[in-house]
Length: 110
Image (cartoon, rainbow, N blue to C red; front, top):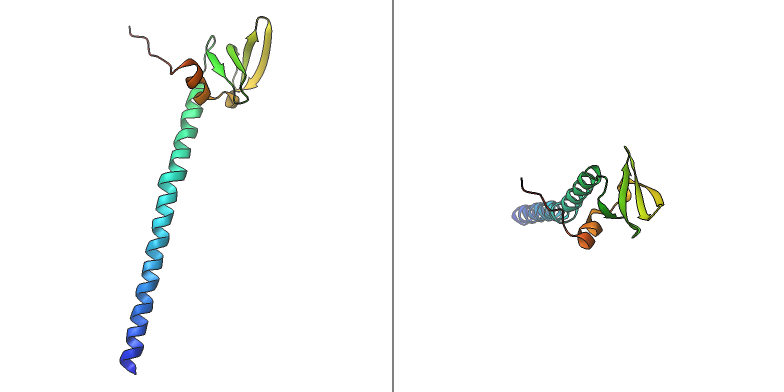
């Protein structure tokens, strides 16, 4: 009777350890496949927003195409047609759509 009880306790402990390993593995999978890529994308978007310059062609998140007319600390004035200027927040300029429509930014060689 005593040996049977010890065997059942050992089996229960190994099941608990396996459950713990499974949960830790799931957390690692979520981190590496969902959270980390999203953080990287946010950093790239912030870097793009900070690097917006006058004269650059951009696309906003809402799909508005325009040329950067003026850059302020947190906003950008886009010229969407001759004489038509609209103010947007820097965060509303989409790096992804801008690169798709106008191509990635090319470095000029000196």
